[in-house]
Image (cartoon, rainbow, N blue to C red; front, side, top):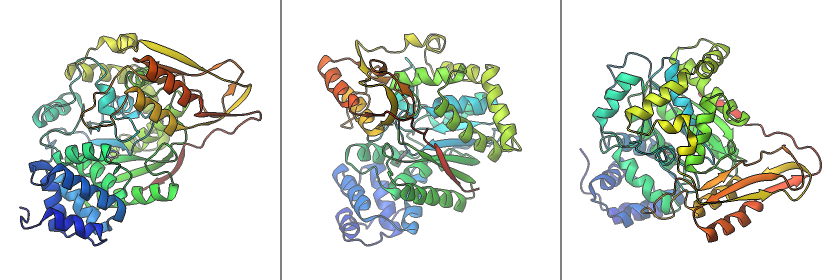
Length: 440
Ligand code: URA
């Protein structure tokens, strides 16, 4: 299928020198990620060259299709309902997939979800789900299909069969400073999403200090590219451009975030998380035809929580994928850190800024993510009870709690997190969370 005469070093040099890669070069690179015909240092060098020199729309489309075709496409033809998924470009405290997928499935729309691990400073849904003891995210393609047929939902990672190239490239990008790149993000997300056998997709494209695309304009370019590549393959795609200028919700760290998602399913979700959850969910239900208007979609999503239907679906998924279901009723059974320390507010007034990047990097140092591909993630560590921008505070009140399994790391993280907050004596406006929708 692929041209075998491409020389990795030559293709890397051509991208390094700013040339557009041919379809054959792109296919050779992606094949090399799967079969080992490109060494990991050559893959990494190409990733860096692409990050520095960029890719045209045509190259990005070729890269996306090559990632998609690096494995099989799930055959979900036996699932009669509409199949929709949601994916985020990566944020801090973004646990929305964990509770949104069961909410959508509870509304009768199938969600065959393939998620990623932590990337750069951002957390990943798979690492969060790993904090549920026994939960298997590495289902085979046939297990994935069977579960979607049976339950209408599956929460897994890339398999050996679905978009396997992304698994290798994603892990290399995570540790080679090659995450913040529009064509690589586009191919990674759209390659694996199109492999799921979905009918439609909703993207949460983040901008701001905690996102891979700090500028709104860059995030918009990424959103437009992903929407048009999806549409070129015949799939309706919508992208919400959303702010990542503070962590989402009050928790950053794997088990802490699962507990926060369980709170959302119990009707106790933080305001910003629920605003975004409902907005993304509304577009998913509208795409699927399960709701005719945004109001109708909102009512259905709210009912999935108030009736307990979404919580029941989540329990079924956790059980089907081998996880300890008891944590859903008793989140205190999730992994707990040995040490915790409160971050105390030094003044009376209002929270002005909460730096999501500083908080994410502190969580990474605590062990909530990876600095090297082989690092083990500590599910228990992170930051909880994080105060929100505009919140009124008094001197001596708690603005965050740091959880650690190492006393020295705890001290360093507390230092860093204290500097993540700034305060104002005057009231501060709440952040606007959803800026624009692309693909309507
Ligand atoms: N999510 C992905 O799956 N890939 C990226 O590159 C970024 C976010």
